[in-house]
Image (cartoon, rainbow, N blue to C red; front, top):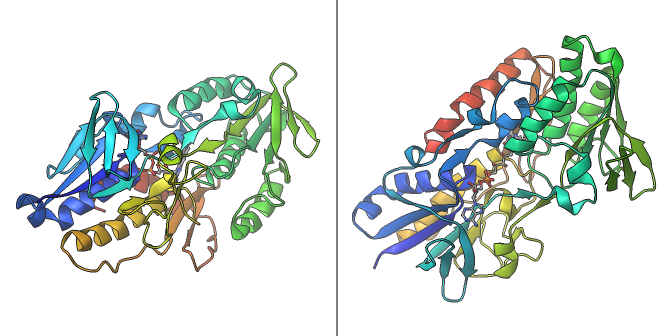
Length: 381
Ligand SMILES: Cc1cc2nc3c(=O)[nH]c(=O)nc-3n(C[C@H](O)[C@H](O)[C@H](O)COP(=O)(O)OP(=O)(O)OC[C@H]3O[C@@H](n4cnc5c(N)ncnc54)[C@H](O)[C@@H]3O)c2cc1C
């Protein structure tokens, strides 16, 4: 009998897992003992970190996208379709356009996160964001014509993908307006929902003085309740009003209805054991990447390291061995500080991060990594 591993979603988490499994289980797959199937709803693989650079004209959405099939190892069966149902009793997923079900022995959910600006009244009409190709392109247009006024960068929804990206955006925007000789005419404000500039304390401590130095006002305990697009005002739960001329908001995020419908997590994120990545709501179901409810950042690096651990675990299970590999929460995030410099943080479930002194070397390392990402997706790096 062939043991079937089905992975839903071929973003960073799903593709790294599939390629690692094909490497680790090459003999078993060749012998017909194991089959790895990767299901994705588009024919493309997207590297989302590229979108940060689109509003500033440094990248285009096309730079973030490559055809999926050549990135996936030949031993993996790639299926282009949308999974529209998960039945953990009969152990099968259903495919929307084929109208058929696929049985699994082990199911891995890696559907990522969705942005839902419509959840905050007025936000979709009144705000811009760089958390998708269309949004980043529209923001590019706005920024190129923005020569004076109040630019507000507001973190509306948490958790969100790449927790440091809003800070990066504010710092890059500051440098960009300086380069264009416009900084004296542009007021910059950054808002965050809790009582400091970032959820990770060490990042907040690092960013606070830097934002001060760069004349970026930081508003904390700022939870947008609604946006008035006509009057260009953000109204908060705390009863404050903030005028803007250009609003760049990090929209609320959502997991997946598949998760809710399958009883794997009420809020759309899969409730998992943080080390084994096993879903708590069903047997032989795992989750990793942004759709997993893990006590770390929703970051590609976390997805990458978690995929390595899960590949080891699933390979052991497929060979009838006891799985011992565990994900320790390892996450590494570069943080652009705007003026051709960057820092980075590395942490896990036990170790808190300590941001390094920003340097040009780290900035170039981030850009270099972004180029070599496609090898990561292939499972090479
Ligand atoms: C602007 C921005 C900047 C970022 N910068 C960084 C950074 O510098 N460093 C970093 O580590 N991370 C960064 N991230 C976060 C990183 O991109 C995500 O954490 C990462 O993409 C998560 O990978 P994933 O595989 O879980 O989800 P995704 O990459 O979102 O992939 C999910 C896949 O599942 C597919 N899918 C969804 N639903 C279905 C379904 N029902 N059926 C079939 N397929 C489905 C989707 O089409 C997609 O291919 C950034 C994110 C953004 C938005």
